[in-house]
Image 1 (cartoon, rainbow, N blue to C red):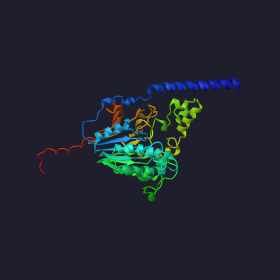
Image 2 (spheres, one colour):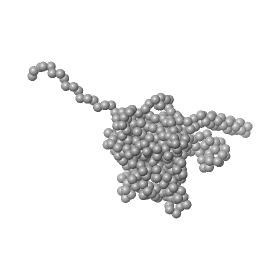
Image 3 (cartoon, rainbow, N blue to C red):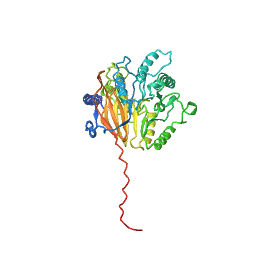
Length: 419
């Protein structure tokens, strides 16, 4: 029979063990928080540079710009404008969703409408003189954080973008799930999915009456399979808001502070220690998940179906935002990017399947060369407007140059034989 004293000792031992674990975790986090992580296999990345050859297209992948500063001093937006000036007409920018925090574009009479418009206008103004393509995707915040009336928020944002930047693309149109395609350059195809459609609550467009090409939640994956099959001769980038691999919060990774002070998730100054109880929230997000987490049943099903298709095609590049950091995974011959630190940063854990992670503002860009070479580049803001670009913390050749075509074999010498 367990005595009261034994129960007390057990409880104290449990609390002490948890405290030691949290201290250990905290000491590890202090070493790597906000430091770039590069997998040991890529330790020599700095010595690798693209071959001198003609660039045929550049593609910036910028996620979660929704909290951008509106005073002209936003470091990422200034860096992006610097990139736009260098890239020129043979380039494109994909905005990977969560374009307006906290809840997209509300109704005209809503008290938050003016602030939402100002944040979106700041982004749209940056592209007014840009000669390349601008492609907007939507994220969960653009759909009013997934609430049942989110579809109306999405339609308002799409209409606003196309009214104020008519040359832009808002894909997929009208909130349909997709997939839709856009030819960026010869031999380079962009495929866009509306990943929020699968996790959204309330009304969602589906079927020809809404202008959608699919009539159920499975057809987009069959269409994606068909698109990828028919375009094996091209280099393909697939874009969606939600990551398929992540070492950050939406992938179930949390800081020591979030275990010990869980109320800081609701308010950054709510430092009320709740050991053990506080760990229940990260455990819930990791195992069951909120609607925006990989563990959530709808997200999990979408991810599983999407990976089942993508894993069949070597060198596919999938780009997402959603988690507020930079992450790159090379897994099963595919390249998976998280570029969601356009206006916010959040904890990301190093290691695991990741080749590169960094808790820092910035974005990824892809460079496509005439010979077929593809490079991943990281762009992070510098310390001042005079130096908008910081030193590069990672780059990698994702696809090597295509081997030269074999030359025709020389005709054999005449042996002098007579027929």
